[in-house]
Length: 215
Picture 1 (tube, rainbow, N blue to C red):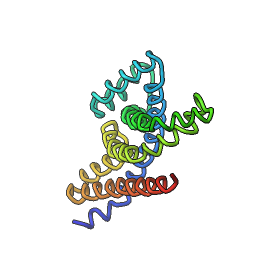
Picture 2 (picture 1 turned 90 degrees about the horizontal axis):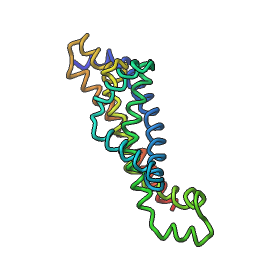
Picture 3 (picture 1 turned 90 degrees about the vertical axis):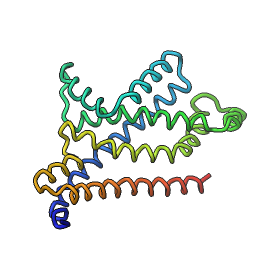
Picture 4 (picture 1 turned 60 degrees about the horizontal axis):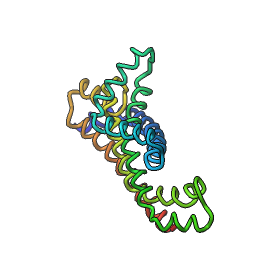
């Protein structure tokens, strides 16, 4: 009944706060991975491009759940002990970093060739051309797929529940085990996820409109 959901709403919101914290960390680090890897893939040498190629196809070809189990439980054998939040952040960031790489690589490739030529005509070369002309335009083009990937990150954090991080999904499962009300509780969990993801989408749309007006 609805009162079960309302009585446990504070617990679910605390779980949602952990989800948001983890997702925020993962978005930042996966974006950094994506930008560096996209630049290396597009303009790096043979070794850099080969390394990024292996990373992309290895990570994107492996389910996130498998990576969560593998990294979290294999790291202790290497003498590296991490808690669930740190382990989850590492795995999710590495996983979605591969998708962010494609987002930024495609954005760099979409900058019209005439913009490069115009920058060179003004005497810009190397990093000046990249930082002043190419990268700002690429970031603008990357906006919509970047927001979509951020939404995927939020939903992907639910898999970190399998290693014991008390985020929204695990909190919902614990409440269900205590109340035996799966429809009400997971209906509330789904609604919270929807609110988070929809808010991200609206923010991305507003940012896209703002950037288009700034052109």
